[in-house]
Length: 254
Image (cartoon, rainbow, N blue to C red; front, side, top):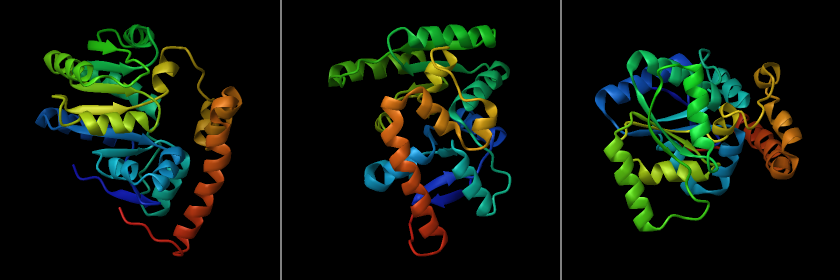
């Protein structure tokens, strides 16, 4: 299934919605192809302005989902009126529910110690019969080559269909790009904070804030020390650069 992309400051954002995303994932798993999915909002796009390697990682992904409403609005403005938000936590729930019909097996990689186990428990309570091949909370430090090779061997032996990566951005994107060719797994999806949200460790913004593009404000209020620089710097820069792109005063390639 070919997916069009919207050029947002040089990042090709997939023109999709959740049903389309599920169809693409089914195709990858059926064909046993190997792809990774980046779930990207304003933060990921702005980070890519200063990091060419990260921009390339996004553009080489099998899908770059419109995680934030600004990316949805820009996609619709570009003529893709079917696009809706493919928010990481929502995508995770949709894929888990869909997996019950398809008998997909999942692997959880990320979160603090004990978080993957708690997340698996919560998801199995919500979706009885959901299957997990394995899970691991990686160390905060960089793994040694030996540790990394052992992890890859373990995951390949367990043969999951979908590997969820719950690290911070851009760490999870780099990890997926580095490992996609080494892992015998059709689908890698980086969902970041979805691990903590669905494990019940962090609160999500109310739906009305998510739909109106104000989720960033909710997250800023709940984690001001960690996020204030991200939002107070990234959001105005994003608006300015998008305005220049829309006016044709700045051009980007993908």
